[in-house]
Structures are given as structure tokens and as C-alpha cells.
Length: 394
Ligand code: LMR
Image (tube, rainbow, N blue to C red):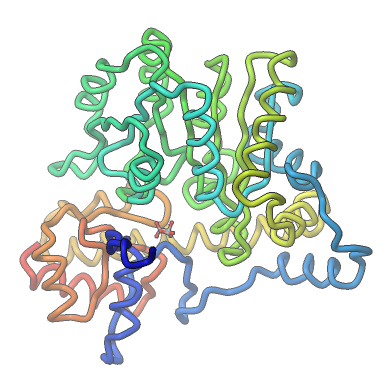
């Protein structure tokens, strides 16, 4: 049997992680995988997470199964974090999932079940695992223009022109905030136009929100998600806790499916629970319990929010430092977009050849499409990167 296996395409982000690890140079710089790093290059366990874990270890009475949807308190806490009071709670079906990727996978399975003929539209570019999972599930896939290589902002006219081709019932995957891989985001005004077009076309929104709190703030980053969710009868939301709680390896995420009304919710909820049962039965609990503990304790929550703000402001400051240094070196404002982008990533907008040159000549690792993880920088490496960008002729 196993002789029939064929090598699968390597995920470019994971391949880059391995190449970085194997590089013996001491001064190499990792701007690859989307993991937050502090100024000394560590990915710290957040203070509130440590304290929540201490309490859970001390007090947890049992490790018996929760439920197929996970702990309902996690569902309620995450619904509040992502949706605020924008949607009546009795319209929201939710299941805990192994990370944001688990939520995306379950959302796609749900779409496959409920709308097998729908095309799922992705931004071009998007996180590479989106098309990979859709292809694996044998679903129909389309893409819409998103990034403008000239301005390094959103090509909004191109996006609208492509979305004009939506068929009734198609699904549009939108990034809730901090677009991965570009860092370029729609304004709420532009999103309002996208919403109007999608309503005209009777399309369904599917939001991937993996960086809430990394862009403009916790509520600010949820604004577009809430704007979309309130405008449609149905909406799918895959949210990740990996980044904003720094609990990457705990695999903590949630899929929320917003039903038209309270009558449509129970069947939706039952279907999500069924899908969990088919794929992995009960979802992981530890990370979800940490998140619930933090979100429901005012002191822990305040501490978490404060640390998240430090993280966010640190990334904004690195963006500004890099844009300033490049302005100084090039005597031009053509890298100002770096300060305007939001979240962990910026797409430099250069060729794979020049990305490879940065790696070969300077030990600087970024994804081949020129996505850099801004959080991989620090005050010492900002000038190194800026110099390398200029000397590579980018
Ligand atoms: C990334 O885009 O680098 C992260 O979401 C990590 C991953 O799984 O690819």
C-alpha cells in the first residue's frame, strides 16, 4: 500500500523554517514563520497565560471529556472577544478546534456539506494553507485580486472587478485583520463596498481572523469582522488564539457559524459537533481553558491586554524604524508602506530571486513571495535588513 504514496508539495513556510534551522551562520535573521519574537528573539509565554496555567494545574478537578463543541464557556468568551455585542448570541453556533487551521478545515467541511457546488474565493495572495486545504478537499476555488505590487497597498478596483464574477452562493474568504501575507488591509469604507457587492451577488462571507490585537487594537481589529457578520444572514468565522495569546503549540481556535436566526442555530450547532466527531472527536481543551480563564478574570484579562498592547506597539515601532532607516538610505519614501501595513507581516513586493539573494548573501530568511515577519526583527537587525534590501537593489 505505502508504495503508492507520492511526495506531497512542501509547505513553503515550513520548508523555510527547516532551511533557517540548518543554516550555520550566527548572524542569520529569521523573518519566516509567523511567530512573535521579543527583542531577544524569544517567543515568551505571556504572563497571564502562565498564571492561568498555574491556577488550572492547582484547581482542575478532572480531565474527563468536555463536549464535542468544547467547553461552552470558551465558546461564549470567544464570541464576546470576536463579535462583541454585534450579533445575538442565540444565532451563533460554535465549536472549539485545534488552532485556527482546525477552524478553517471544519468551515470548509461545513461548506462542502451545505453548498457542495459553491466556489470558495481567496485573495491573491493568501495564506498558502488556504488553497492547499481547499484543493485537498476537492472543492472549487477562485481568486480575487488583492495586492498592488506598485503601491504595496490593496488593489481595490481589481478586487471589486474580480468579485463581480461571484455566483449566487459562492463563499468569499476574507482576512478579518492583519492580512497574511501582505499586511495591506481594507478600510471599513472599502469593506462596506465589498459587502454591498457580496449582498447583490448573494455570496457568503467566511472570515479568517488569526491576528486580533496585532494591528490597531483588540476591538479595532474585530471591527471588520463585526461589520461583515451583521450584514449577512450567514457568516463563518475561523478565529485563532495562537498569536494573540502566544499559545501556538496548544492548538486553540474556534469556528463560529452565524445562523440566520435562533431557529437555524441548533441544526448548525449539531452539524459542527458532528464534524468535530468525525475529524478528531473532542477538541483540545488546555489552551481553550487558559483563554477562558484569562478572558473571564478581570485582573488576568487586564494583564493580558497590557502585554498584547506592548507586543503590538513593539511591532509598530519596528515597522517605523525600518521605514525610517530605508528612507534615510534611499532618500525616498518608497518604503513608507511598511509603516502603514498592519499585523505581523509585510510583503516587500520583490522577486523570488532577490528574496533568495537576501538569504544567500545576508542570511536573511523571508518567504519567497517576499513576506517578512516584522516581529522577527529587533533594533539591531533593522539596520542590517535595511542595508541588505538596498544592496540587493530592491
Ligand atoms: C504563518 O503564516 O507563518 C503562520 O500562520 C504559521 C503557519 O502555520 O503557517
